[in-house]
Length: 252
Image (cartoon, rainbow, N blue to C red):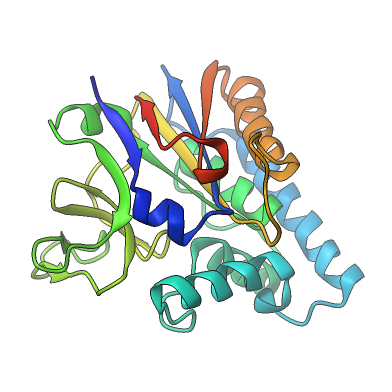
C-alpha cells in the first residue's frame, strides 16, 4: 500500500503547517474545461480586488505570502527572491496581467486557482505513478548526499543536488519538488493522461493551531473537493496532516 509521510523533522520545523491531501480518482484531464477556466479567472479577479482594497503594493506584501517567505527563510534558509513559492509566483503574475495563467490542464488549472484564491501553495501528483514505485511519497528535509532533481523545463539537464536544510517532496532519492513548492520535476507529473490524482496544499498559519483543521485549512479542502465535484464531476477523499493534528502519515 502506498503511503504519504511528513517527516518528524519537518513537523518540528513547521509546527503550524497543516497539509491538505485530496485524492481524486477517475478524472478527465484530456480536454479544456470551460468551467475550470472561468473559475480560475474569477479567482484572479477577486485577488486583484483584494489587493486593491487592502492597498497591498505587491505579492510579497500580502500577509500570507509574507508568512511563507519568512517561515521558509527561518527554518530552511530559503531565499524567497531566488526560490519564490508557487503562490507568490502565481499571484505576482495575476497582479501584473490581470488574467488567468495560460491553461495547462483542468487539474493543474484547478489547483492553481486554489493557490490564487487562498494565497496558499498547492499542487498535485499522478497517483498511479506514485504507486508504481515501492517507496512512499515523503515531505522531508533533503539528504544532500543522495537526493537528485531534474527540472521539468530542462529534462536533459544533469541531475542537481538538493541544498542543505531544503524541504522537498521526494520518492526514494528522486526529488519531485524542490524548496517545498518552488519547482517541479517530471516525476509523477499530472498530465492529460492522468486519471487518478493526489492534490495537496501546504497551509501555513501565523498563530498556533489546534488539534483540528483550521478554518483556512478546511476552506482550502472544501474548495478543492467542491471544484472537483462541481466542475469536473469527480468525488474525492480528503485527509489532513500536520504536527498539531497528531498525524503525519496517510494512505494513498
